[in-house]
Length: 132
Picture 1 (tube, rainbow, N blue to C red):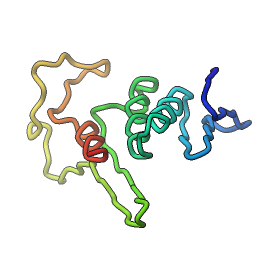
Picture 2: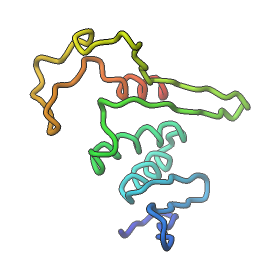
Picture 3: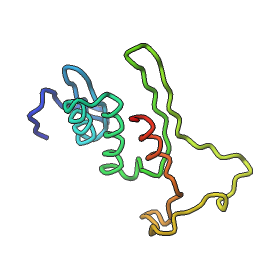
């Protein structure tokens, strides 16, 4: 991968991810395009949280089997003020939960795994909560 930016991508022997290092931030990812989009966001004035959310969405594109918009997540944010914030967008169902309790998106065809999306995807809602 070539880039005009002031960072480098290194491949550590035996490691399964690329290391993107910049002067004022970093993005760790398995795929170089994920790190690239995170660095791009920060270079355009975005925060580390903005970069993390953009990287998460890029991960959906380049590694769809590992991460998806219909998934869930947790983001730990340490603010410059010293305050720590946890955004939890993981929905843990009760033991009595059954599939018929979830409303499905009727207007969306089943995905490559064979099932339809649950309405109000948690990842999209959670990522939006992190940047607003």
